[in-house]
Amino acid sequence: MTGMVMTGIVMWVGGRLIAILNWLATGFAVQIGSSPDVTVFPQVKALAGKSALVVSACYVLAVVACGIVTMVSGSMQARYGVKELVPRLVFGFVASNFAVPLCAALIEVANALTEAMVGGNGTAVFDAATMIVTHLGAALTDESTALLAVIIGVTIVFLFFTLIFTWIVRVVVLVILGGLAPIAMACYGTPWTEPAAQLWWRTLLGTLGTAILQAIAFSMGIKMFIDPELNVLTLLGMANGDVANLLLALVTLWMTVKIPGLMRRYVTRGSGNTNPAVLIMRTVATSTVARKLPIRRGA
Figure 1: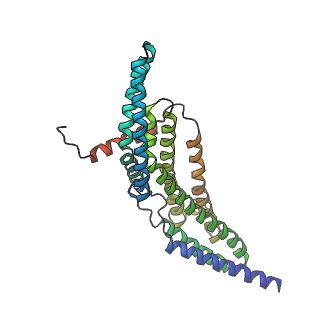
Figure 2: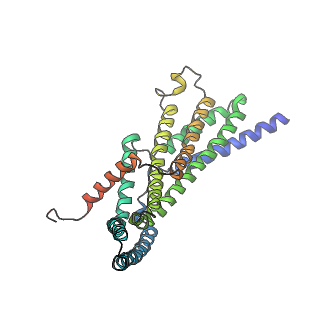
Figure 3: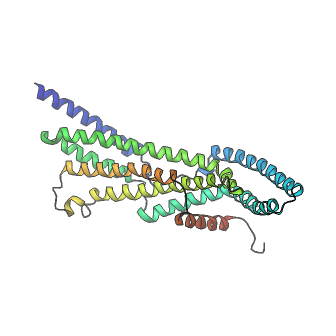
């Protein structure tokens, strides 16, 4: 009697898991490695406009302060310090005006890099959830593997929702970074505020890098148990059973979910030297924005 009740509970939970996975496959086919162009969102435009007003007001005060120091102070050291500060203020003001297009260019570059690395990954969640449903349904028909399959299935569903949650958080972070982009780039105007600009760069590149790494990890992991020729269990000579494939999907999802935590360490650490990746991304993004600006060649 107890065995029949236990079997009924396992089958009921398994049925609910299959229903949830089918919903994920058809109702939430999110592109793991893509980042939307948040600069076209109304919220980002409104916040960026307010940030630009703050930058303009602060720069007027900074220019007035520099002028007062130059006229009042008679020491060469103070004047030399002002001469160093003026070019930084000019650079910060110009950079703040191109901050939003620069942010859009970086998102475009990151999406293009993801497309080049893994191709179109819009159906990755659909393919993964479909294959997991297939293996889970087959494992439930065997009483010896049904309970273990249900336990693995519960963990897989939890990781799926964690992955979706991290994707939503990433989009929200991009919205905030896009709205604060003018203020962040304006922080290059003084040596005291430059660390804030560097933190903005690390956060933006870390957020976009998270999407790229998650796309690579998720797509490659899914191919390992969807494509029979690439199945790692077959290549290693292991038993290619339903439970083994569910464990492979579990490991793939776990690795993908762990990537944001690794990127968080990169963002929160101190920035001693300029990262070469930051320089490359800045150069590519700046050239992309420059090509899109409506500037005449004669100018």
